[in-house]
Image (cartoon, rainbow, N blue to C red):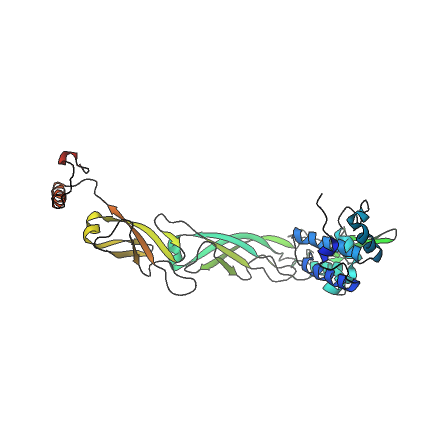
Length: 370
């Protein structure tokens, strides 16, 4: 079992803090980690419960006195906030309704939660990954993408009720979305089992969505991918995400770009790199070599006396920049290209060069290129 943290440490207050300081500290944490502000975040919910447990003890003079004397051992074996089990969310909302009322409005958390279920709200943002070729990064492109998501049912406009009817106030909870049960001296509030907390029930469900108010839809949209994108570039397309709830706006669509690797060129930022095979005589004498780039042929001037591995630059033939109109550069690393076999004339001339340089070479019959 994990060791419980000190209650004063959880709230970030001194042991001498008065009741008002403790309440303010708790309100601050409740606002930060409240489930409505951190939907689906289990870590935030755990911190929210931890703060509620600390406040439940330190806001009670008797419990605080016991805690100051005996620490967490003072509450071992007891149920509830100070006991072995952590606080239940409904316990927190029912016991500290005044605090949540201050934060979320006079109706308190539960009423706010019930209203939010039936109020217009924005749909979720969606993420879509698409892949393009490196050549297409040069000019950009328009790409058609297709995906499925949820949207309001068009027949019932998201209400879930069939045409000509409306959802009705839940008879079990009276529209609050919560059911209060009296247990001795305590009143416990739980989510209504009949309406699932919405405060409304549907007696005549819509046939298209079966009362859910939502339907699966297939979306097909054209995305403009600008020149210069790279792996991980995210494009935001407003209002193209999940459909809104109860007439609320759609979420946004985020398209993440993946650029395929190229067989010849490697990319580093806005620059491109490749290897280039150059005939050995051009290494010695220099000369012009024509080769392909990502967007057409380029001419490269090989300097006289170039060394293998030397790098030459072709300015402005790299990748476009997303931040401006300039392009990066294209770099070629030079490799020596020898013929597989010398002709009789070539063999004769190379031997003459070797003789001039007083370089010993193999006899003709044992030549490297024969």
